[in-house]
Image 1 (cartoon, rainbow, N blue to C red):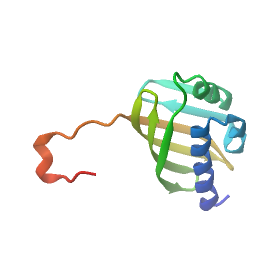
Image 2: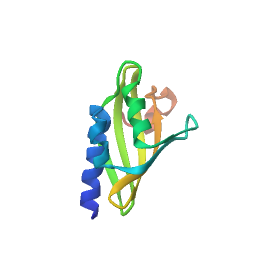
Image 3: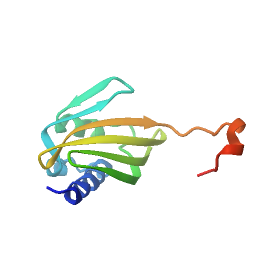
Length: 126
């Protein structure tokens, strides 16, 4: 599998995350898939547990936009804007391949916050 194939696999991973179609998870997730959320100190073992979390998320899973995918070889980073029933958040996901499947995901989330006035002269609004 080359880098272009891995990029397509990551885009498919994001589609599955948003669609909740975890019947399709086998296309992209390794049998020993593990997901970690360092901010909450949680680890999810197995694609079935990952699917159950999305299916049972209060109010439903997220919608979102994939902003950027960078990487090469077995390690890739995906950046996305997500909107959960509880509100918007930004996500950064480090994805690690084993063979031709995503074997590990380490995810960080950050809610938007207002820019402080004191630094306005040095920044531009996005």
